[in-house]
Image 1 (cartoon, rainbow, N blue to C red):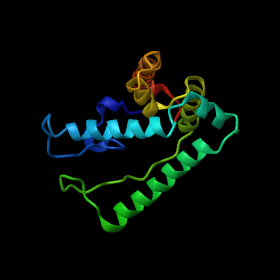
Image 2: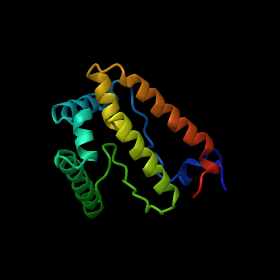
Image 3: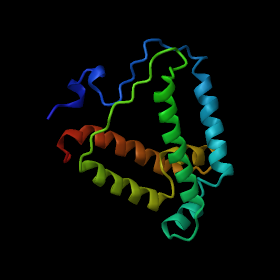
Image 4: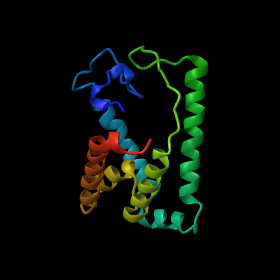
Length: 160
């Protein structure tokens, strides 16, 4: 099994092959887009712990509609990118590598779902909740970061 640190950036499953670096000021567009994304999450009640509990109890269609809309939007977006050979804002080609299934994805999905059910948030809404002033979610954010670090540390030892 190959250690991920030994892989070249080009060998990564999702390489960031952008050739141009961006200045600090040009990165502000990502902060703006993230803030807008968080605002939509808050106004759409996507970060609401009660809405997420409704979803897991099958009491409401709200979250299923949001998630289903995101999946359909993603499918259409990828299709459009491939169909019209859409490039990045820097003019670079968008490369979408085929994904290979392994059983570790099932275990990861179950752990992710358990964490989502317990905390009432997946990674995107965590930051929106923090930005909305729910400071207790800081524990969840730090736990999520620790989980990512642990995954990276022990990835080679996990079932594939």
